[in-house]
Amino acid sequence: MEPALNQNEELLGITPSRRSPHGGVSRKRKADRNSWKQSVRKIQRQSGKAYKNTKGEQMPKRSIVALKSCRNCKFKCSTNISEIERQIIFDNFWTLDDDGKKHFYSKTTENLEKKRCRTAAGDNSRRKTSYYYSFFVSNTQYRVCKSYYLSTLNISSHRVFYFHKFNTSLTTGTPLQSKSGKHVKKRLLEESKQVVRDHINLFPRIDAHYSRKKTHKEYMEGSLNIGRMYDLYKIYCDENVSPPAKEHMYRYIFNHEFNIEFQKPKKDLCDTCYEYRNIVNASNKQTDSYNKHIKSRNDTKTERENDRQNVDSKTAIVCIDLENVLNLPRANVGNFYYKRKLSNYNLTGHCSLNKKGYCILWHEAMTGRGGNDLASAVTCLLLKIMADFDINKFILWFDSCVPQNRNSFMSAALCEFIIRYPQIKVIEQKFCEPGHSSIQECDNIHSQIEKSLSAAEIFSPLGLERAIKNVNHNYSQARINKSVKKAASTIVAKPLNTNIPMAACFRASYQSISVAKVNDIIS
Image (tube, helix red, strand yellow):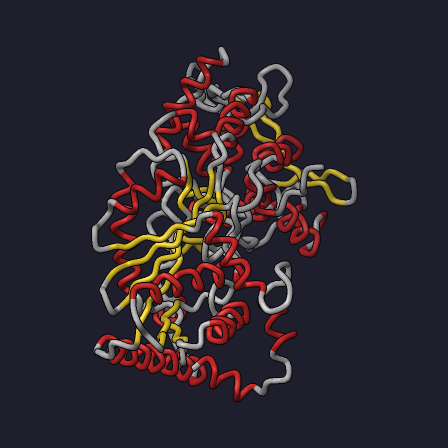
């Protein structure tokens, strides 16, 4: 069932079939023709309301033009029609659209041959026809004079002349259909449009990594673009013996029926700072919240600088961050773009003692990237660092991603780690202020990895491991193989059962410990 038209659409003559068929959010904004200045101006002009013309001049609102007197008129216009009835006629006329006004003219005006000639014999008269004007009041037709008719509707005589000259049938005198928008367009068949949609749907997509709650945008791998997709589409049409659509139509459907981006899902701007900068008149509460945010950012920066100056050989300061999903295989092969990719995860750590990076790799067939999985990977990373150094304290820097690291899963894993390895006396967890990263070391590692992988062809997780090893000789790399993952899973599941998540382990095993003692263990 098609939705009803609003008043603006009715005045513009828009039919339900002319509405945009695309629902929901698209990649680009859809044009709202009703909000255009030209459309608003046209609607106001057709409705007799005040408006600004194209020159910016303010045009007044239409109203009934007052006449001196129509009592001496032979048609007795003022006697037959009262001022109230005249106002009703005016109001009803200006609620009509163009087609309605044409029907009104055909009902209330006539253009007939003149009955007599007043010019001298032998002179040519310029007037060939005569116009007759009338109004309907209570189903009764009253003939009125030209002045009364035009002043009641507040129109010029040109409207009536133009209607009878160009918009009426010469044989029947009935209004002709409007020729506006009747030019022939080369319309693409719906079957061809559906082929375009089917081809776009062949490409696998992923949701946003950080902001999936705030947006429904989907992402394709960065090596694709619309031009490349259209080239693949032409090959696809040749294989299926289907005539391809033009590239502009492919782009239109992609931009207006899908909400897809090619760049990797990132969130580089701070929401709090960006929102505050766009507030015109900030309230005291908003200013206090922003100042608190900036103070926390500065305090975090100072704390991070202090840790960088730490020279204690028994303390390892580790920055930890999860890289964006790495989809495999990666190659410039047309068929690969249509296949479901294997998601690979890379938890990167940077140790202050040797200035090296550690990459913990696994793929979705082994485990996911939830809080329980990240806690297992962090434990594996700490074990790798412990094997390289004789240390008794860890200072761990994370971003403020609650589902991944700022949760009870991570706290339980670190508490269990201290109990299992008594040589570690203290583990401190420190978090960056949301929107302001203080772990640039991990960002630099991710940047070098992405640059190296952009020109590489990788077909398996083993190939990814080899490629990351070759990124820079300063980056040590540890891969979660089956045996290591089994040990990591044992750590996650301790001390109760291998199938119980860390959050449940934390509540079950440490429920008798006070909050203060738990805080002493962690920091």
